[in-house]
Length: 134
Length: 134
DNA sequence: TATAGTGTACTAGTTTACTAATACAGTCAA
DNA sequence: TTGACTGTATTAGTAAACTAGTACACTATA
Image (cartoon, rainbow over all chains, first blue to last red; front, side, top):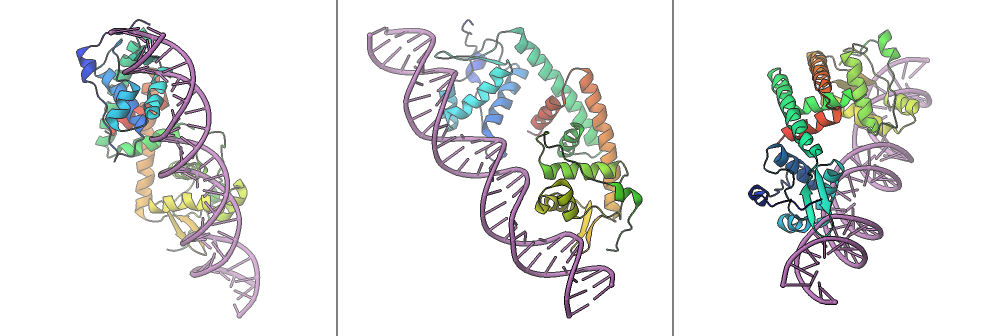
């Protein structure tokens, strides 16, 4: 694991919280980081804000940040190195992840549009998807 | 609210639990009842199993059944009458609900097939839908 | 009217999910 | 080597979600 270069884009990346949304904090962090990847705001090798930076910035506990980063590490999106920091994974897996994610958003966007045209809400879609799980 | 007739189909309707699925019991009841409506196993006016029948049948607490039925009542799917029982709502709302539901399942089924063809899991779809909410 | 069966309401207990506090261990530069 | 910074791990606290226990109120029938 070589240390990634600090790109200008990475320096501008910051998390934001919406405490009214009801979405758990750690989940928001995960979502935002994946979105940053999907929109090329972050790329392989970039260092992401440290656990403590994020915690101070957002006035949350470091362990909440850890939770998000750990999940992303398990998914192969992030690579963390104790004492050094956390980076966007360099392996082609992460690139595939980005494409995978981008295409998924495309598909889902089409779905939502199509269903919305017939009067179905996002919530209804989600519930129906849940039922498909059986 | 006139008392619905007991159709043969309604007598055959029973809930089943999958305790391994991790889906809360009350949610399973909701899902199964909606599915029974969507597949015409139950129709407007049918009486559904009583709170206590379901509780005894599935070895759960009556209040868990109540929770499911109450949510369905709020959604206009069920009509409950204290001392009498619980019925599929007679209003055209419930019929619209059935058509609405059936079409939704159709749409979602197509979505899942299409996305599955590209290697996306149900879980991924659901997560991507969540992100659409922003 | 009495009884059996119905849903309703309230409280309580348990589990799960989420977040925090804190100490430990590793890295890197001076 | 030291100090600052890094992630890691463990425990604990809180809130939310889920389920249960139990009594009350209503309905229908004999």
